[in-house]
Length: 203
Image 1 (cartoon, rainbow, N blue to C red):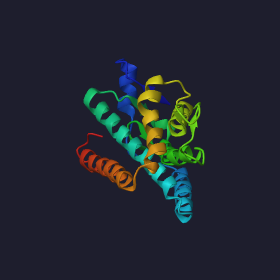
Image 2: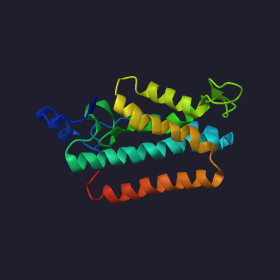
Image 3: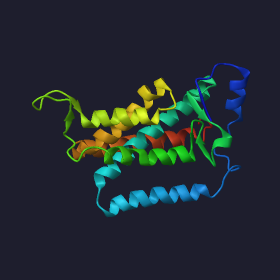
């Protein structure tokens, strides 16, 4: 169950206050199975030396974590996060808006998006004589964002899922120096925020 944009009602406040972040009360062994699947996918790509694919996965996943941290900060500051998950929907809640199952899905989403691009990533759709048109990477990001937002939340489609898939489709083709800077920067920021804000009880 998802809850978006707290409406200030007592019911909404009760739903938010009932969320048990990082509680193990609903833990079961599907947690381990899902983790094993993610490890298998990443290790398979590493063995094939598909480093661009790994980069796509890590780029999206790093942006995903930054968004979830920001959502948790908003929830702490204003009483309502922009989105949340419920205790009953998961084996483990990582932050107020993301559970283990969703997070592991997003760890693979960038890999899926990148693999769905044409072999020639310079391809442009609707171009004439090689001019104009739309980049296949942009088109792919929009398509994947729309697919992930099929449950009908337009603000999340525009402000969240599109940036996720833009990262997955564009970062792997950056110059090596820029690609490295992006990945190190996003993950360093995520780690800094997590190790600072979790002990403070903010997220």
